Length: 244
Image (cartoon, rainbow, N blue to C red; front, side, top):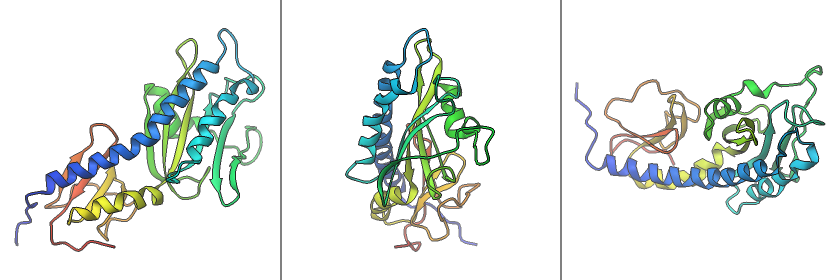
């Protein structure tokens, strides 16, 4: 049996891919941090807000959907169920599709069929628990997009410093793949981006399809973890076949 050794140059290639991945994620997270501050500033002190008082989220959310790169498929505010006086379980969320930008219609009455408790979903629970931004996915988003999605969420702090909700943006994995594939291909080796649990985000290796779980680093591959976002880059042997 021939030992497979990761060739020289793989580490710089992985670092370059990681840098581009972090840059791309920052273009989604940075506007959300600003959006969270905008919503927090609109929250009244000493009482619960009414729905009309949170219209401040609309302009920054729609700005994300009008990005020139078409990266963001949905954006808005998901409020704590007890936050808004006249709209419990409210999602101030907009999506962009064939009909343009439209508000997301969901069942907000827990007693009705089709209601979904979003407070048990990762994109809500993690930032609510940690108080920090979070990226969920890739996963098939049956609530909004019905496609492989990455959901970026940032907690919104109320006047008492508690988490009043989260602002977020949905990114189709296919759109992120379109932007990342050129830099992956440029390294001249099979390259795969995975999340922290090893699930494939994007890859030039034909066996690594989106959503595929990689439980252990493949033999001969180098792994480079990003310190800024919850993703890792795997780089394989130079002469392995690369999908196009």
